[in-house]
Image 1 (cartoon, rainbow, N blue to C red):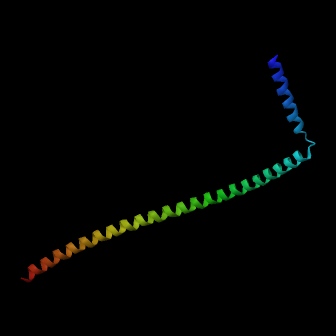
Image 2: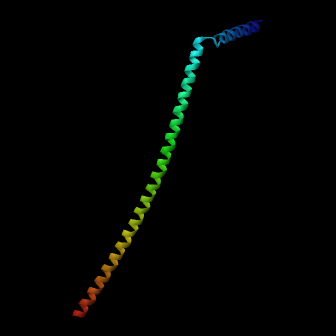
Length: 107
């Protein structure tokens, strides 16, 4: 008996809630329109943000490529500097050797 009473009470509460959701309720219609308007606005903002994200992603890709190019150029210049320094060292050694030879010939 108690369960029947509880079921009847829950059913009654559910029916009351359904009556509150009556589409003729002007407040509910107004709320639905506001929510729909907000949904449309959010969809517009989402598309705008997705577009901006795509632009930023492309800009990031370009900047990354440029940075990679600059790093490669820097590495190449550093390698050339090392080679140049090595050649200078070789020339200094050859010069020292030649000066020693000249000194020997002068004696």
